[in-house]
Length: 212
Image (cartoon, rainbow, N blue to C red):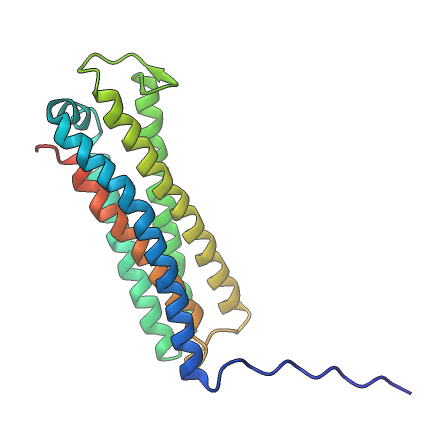
């Protein structure tokens, strides 16, 4: 005598539209908390920049302008491919989604490689406050560099999370679990990726363009 199959739990949503609304609400709530988190750092940066404009300008000129500029182009291009991937799955083109998400992840890895190369150069030039610092300049320049490392390192952590989510999307797609009717994961990861890119769009001028 075989035991009865356990009944599957009922869906908490009345239909797919309600599920999508709940998914988007959850993701936007997460993004709102992240905005508050980064907003505090941006506020601190702006307050100290107003207090020590000469020192922050001197610190900005010690950064590699072209590394920041290239990384901005890399991230904007990655957002383009993420948007194209979302458009692909909306018409059921899973192969196109695979290509676009792979390119997005590859550009994310390239961004991190450029950023870590910049960190290495700054370490070699004694521009890391509290660890390896010996640069000539106003004493408050260390405050600028400290905020630079905190904000860009936190952004890099978010990039790593995003790349992991892109890998998850690729796995789902290879297993045939994404389609025109099951595209919510693509939209959610896309929202997160675009948010991380937008954070860099604010970081780039604040850190690299003073007063170029």
